[in-house]
Amino acid sequence: MGTPLSANKPVAHLSGNDLITMSLITGSRKQLLTSLCLMVIFLDLPLVVFAPLLESLMDAFAIGPGTAGLIVTTVWVGSALSKIPAGYILTHFPRHHMVLGSGILLTSAAAVTALAPSIIVLAAGGFLMGAASGAYLISASPLVSELYPERVGWVLGIHGTATQIGVVLTPLFVSAVLLTSHWRLVFLLIAGVTVGATVLFYLTSKRTNLPTAGTADQHIHLALQRHWPLIFTGIIILATTGFIWNGLFSFYPSYLIREKGCPPQLARNMLSVAFVMGIPAFWISGRLADRLPHIPFILAIWSGLIVCLFSLTHVQEIASLVIVTAVLGYVVSSIFPVLDSYILKSLPDENRASAYSLHSGIAMFGEASGSAAVGLLIDQGYTYDSVFQLFGVGLGIILSILFFLYLLRKLPTNTVIRSPNN
Image 1 (tube, rainbow, N blue to C red):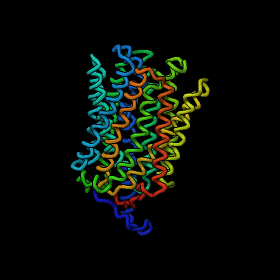
Image 2 (tube, one colour):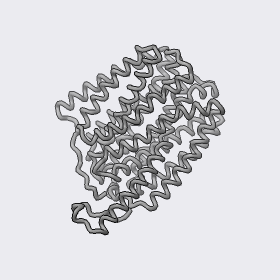
Image 3 (cartoon, one colour):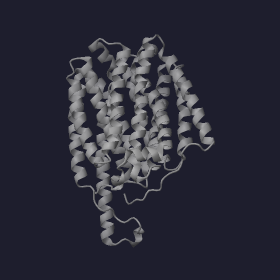
Image 4 (cartoon, rainbow, N blue to C red):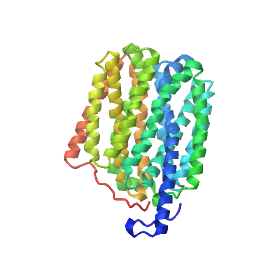
C-alpha cells in the first residue's frame, strides 16, 4: 500500500527525490486508471447485455415479456445484493483485491450463462454476472476517486466514459454475433475478454503505489449512523433514475419494434444511439461536477429527463426518434457522474466505501425492479407509451419534493475537503 508522499510541501520546495517519487506515483496511477477503465467496460456489461438479447431469449426459451423482464431484474438484483456484502468485505480487504475477485466471478458466471440449458440456469448465471458487476463498482468507484482526490468529478467522468464505451458497443456487438452465430457466443466472448482484462489489472496493481485512504474504513454500521441523510438522499436519486432507465432501455428495442414500427436491426442499433451519448455526457458532467452545486445540477438534469420521456411517446418518424433517443441518452447518463461525485466527495476517508456501498446497494433494488415493472405492466395490457408517461409523472412529483427540501436547506450539501495524501 506504500507510504504516501507528503502533500504539505509546496511543489517548489520538494527535493529532487520527492519530485521523482511524485512522478513515478502519478505515472503508475495513470496506468492503474487505464486498466480500471478497461475492466469496467466488461464488468458493466451484465447490466446492459440482456436488453438487446431479449427477443432472442424469448424465442429460445418460449417466454413472454413479463418473464424476460424478470430475467433482467434478476441480473440487477444480483448486482444489488452483492454491493452491501462487498462494502463489508472492503472493511477487511484492500479495494484492488475485490476488483480482482469480481473479474474472476464474471468470467465464471458468463461461462455458466452461455451453457444454460434452461431458463432457471440462465437466470442464475445472470444473477452471478450481476453480482460480479456490483462488487466491482463498489470497490472500483472509491478506488478511482482516491487515485486523484483533488479531481474526483474529473476522474469519475473518465471511468464513466469508459463504461459508456462498453455500453455503446454492446448492442452492436450483440447484433454482429446474432447475424453470424448463436446468442450463447455472446457470453462465451464476455468470459474470454474478462480474463484478459483481469490479468492486466493484476499486473498493473502490483507495481502501483496504491492509495491508503480506505484503511480506516472498518465499520459499516458507523458509516450508516454518521451519514444516513446523505445515504438516503443518494438512494432516492439513484433508485428513481435507475428504475426509469432500467425499465426503459431493457425494453427499448421491443418498444421501437412493437409501437414505433422499427425493423429489429434498427431498433437494436437505436439503443446504441442512446448509449453513445453517454460518452460526452460522462466526460462533460464529470468535469462540471467539480464546479457546480450537485443537487441543483441533478434536479436540472431530471427536468430534462421528464421532457425526454414525454417527447419519446409522441414522436413517430425515424429522424425524430433518433434525435429524442440521443438527447435522452445524454440526459440520463449525465446524472450518474454527478451523483457519484456528490456522494464520494461528501464522505470522509474512514466511511467512504462503507457508506457508498449502502447507498448503491440499497438503491439497486429500486433500479432492479424497473424491468420487471415494465414487463408486468405490458403483460397487463398497458402500452409502452402509457408506462413511460407514468414514469414522467412520477419523476416530476419526486423532483418537486426534492426541490422543496433543497430550498428549505434540508438536503445534505457539505463537501469533505480531502487531502491529496491518499
